[in-house]
Length: 267
Image: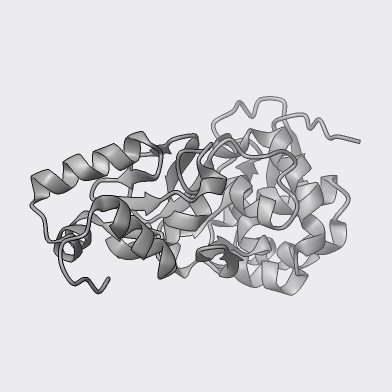
């Protein structure tokens, strides 16, 4: 709560927030703390938004945009997503190519910040910042690490969980070849035993595809513990690329997998 001796103007309120180290606020909080009507507040905040001093990534949720991010017209996603998810009481984690970037393995900068939730949610476009949401059952139980940001911390899937998600959401991660090249860079961050444990909470088909790809990118030792998991749990062969034709595809017995696509790996 910002302590006030009377009504604050919008710019004064934003300065007080920044001075207190707060860069997110709810419309309802601002109304209470500024002591103005909803209509007057929206007009005042609209003027600040036109000057790119604030932005609203979601209904009723605002961010203060410091000078270093005025060109983005928003805070970077990792600096407001944690607060937004907390305000909505939604378990989340940053995943796929976004997560890979935290481990130095994005291969190229993701075009959008990728976040997993347990239920669908519309994408966010805030200035030049784009956030896309993907759905994963029990997202709040997926292993994640906390990374510090200038405005707090953000939850990011572990290297092992990231690798499994990459093969499970190939289309959203740039396709099979891009996934394979990211895995080649991510592999050195993967702990073999942890990977097998993490695989237990994911579809077994993901472990089949991931083990095969890790071997193909030269990380055979990282895939070793997955083989026992696949042998114990895989009841049928799966396709390397889901929903793609299997006709004439080679069958890889070790992974109970149809290699129904050719890999193009970067050298």
